[in-house]
Length: 301
View 1: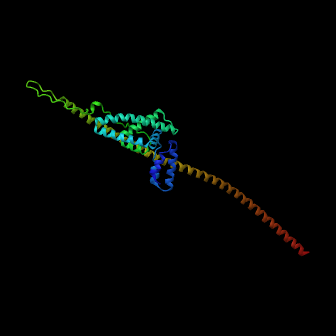
View 2 (view 1 turned 90 degrees about the vertical axis):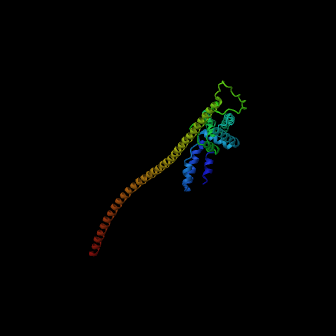
View 3 (view 1 turned 180 degrees about the horizontal axis):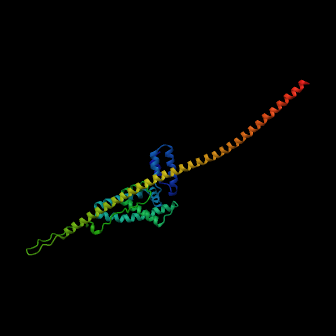
């Protein structure tokens, strides 16, 4: 069994079709004695409506999905380096792209017969924000295998305009050397630049820490969900086994009752047969005696 192909096919199904198809694939893997495949497929989660619609968009609009991934890489790079021009330009494209893709995702879902409510559309936008900010979310989205929207807030830490490096400006004319008696001015732009750099560094550190924490939380949640899915699968198997054993016990009890009834009837038949045989013996004895008496009388005569 090609597990990757199976997973891709499952996440291409509508949400209401997912569980039955997944369980059938698990049963197939178990029949083939492929324990690893059965375990992995059993751990797959049914996609939410927002995740399903997002997966549908990636499958139907691969070129637009690729542009979204490129924008995410640009934004993450700009955020790491805090390139002012690149960050401003990418941020403007971010809002436009998310609005456009969320609308197209809703249209595709509508065409597929599963219209999205406003709440689900907001989930789709949450997924798109995650695609831009988190490489792991972007990878799952690009593979069209999302099961749900990121639970942690995955987005870029806000960077205020004053925290960004200023645009390049022509060098200011060299100030004349102060004459004696004139108090030299403090180099305020240098202090402002240093303070700005410190704010940038703090913002960068906060951003990286927040993103790392979001990824850790997502990993913990994914592990917990996988464990729950495995436990649910084991519990379902145990319930099915209990049901099967109960049915077998019920059949055994019915067979016992039938055998007991048959044994009772047989016992009665044996007693009746024994009585009949005894009666037949007594009758045969009387007949022999009578025959003997008749024979003696005949001989005397």
